[in-house]
Length: 521
Ligand code: KIV
Ligand code: ZN
Image (cartoon, rainbow, N blue to C red; front, top):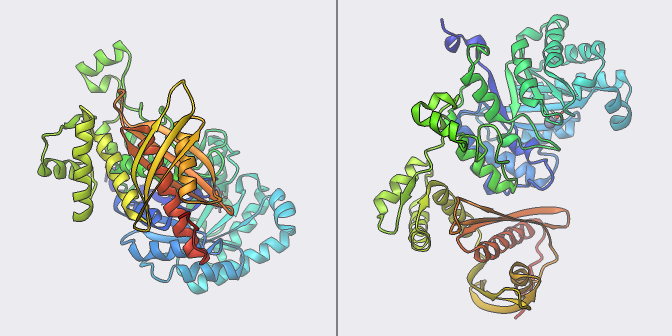
């Protein structure tokens, strides 16, 4: 039997992009975005999707419910603190899941016991007993985590884990909550628990690492070598502070080096790039250019020696094939003469399955783009489709036109024409540069108190005619929304991204309180 056939070497992938990933400040996602990501994770073969923390907010509850309804194969998991109320709420949110899992946790380290929980050791053990037993009375599939496990006294951690196992937890997760451990220690902790905790070998042991010291991937893989069989991770390593273990890194490490890591997963790795792009777009967190696996430069070869080697044999400087992570060669796609069939074909190749109406709209936009831009690349098409989806999703406000005056001689001005609830309105404003002027004009047309927290532009491809992809993040009453748009004109992309965020903000307001956004006549 090869390693790939030995079931004991199968590593379960638990994705927490929608829970721990979304917890990173500013990475908030809308319900539709969460559903889209969950659907793709399911198609990618992720074993467990942690969809949210249902007690945290109505939005989280709704997201876990909605994800439970759409996911076909993956287990759907809801997080709960060590309280019956939290656990019941998680269970209620999971009612539609084909395969539900409750994940409950409590801090076990001295710092967490004393300063976060104000509980002594015995009180924490009692809570574990009570809450794991309760969770198991609702659901057969229960995961338990001792938060800050890597800074917990070993003898106490053994006691705590033993109780969770006795009370019926089916997966025991060992979190490195603050990214403090190192590979040798991570492995040793798992070995120690396997030696000391009766019955632990009957449970799945999970590893959940944060990346504060840049060791999350190494720590997760070390835990697997020592006996863990579930890795908790996020797309692009999204997550609190320095993030979580990156799904793409652990999965590809096991795929590329089975000689030293004889483990395998059920992940279709060709979906990695698509998910990476979508998570980056909806979270507003750009992927660092030299990020392993999914960075723009991860497969780029700049130096003469490397390019020469690559032309002779790709293996000289590439340890994995770009196609394996879903990177089709950044080839010249089509120009303005390309027809519908070719465009449709390209979308299928890129794994972008869109409905008929969206296709018509995207094709019109593609033609306009091909007119404006000599060369249209795969990345242009992906940005265009994402832009079409965001701009048609919530359309109370539509951008009709953008024009303005910029340059060294001030004042810079912008004239913005919007359709607001079906009525055309325009406004001209001044500002410190054209973006500021445009946003000032929009504020006059759609008065709001939301604060702009982030304005970010990146070029989709190279060249001065590249599309600009703009993300804006706005905050109102502690709630965040992000807007995105792409266009060859940076000003048009900026205005559309801003208006996209306002449409989302409107939707959020309508959901939380029935106070309509005022408008000027
Ligand atoms: O990092 C952590 O400890 C967590 C727990 C909730 C598992 O995210
Ligand atoms: Zn975490």
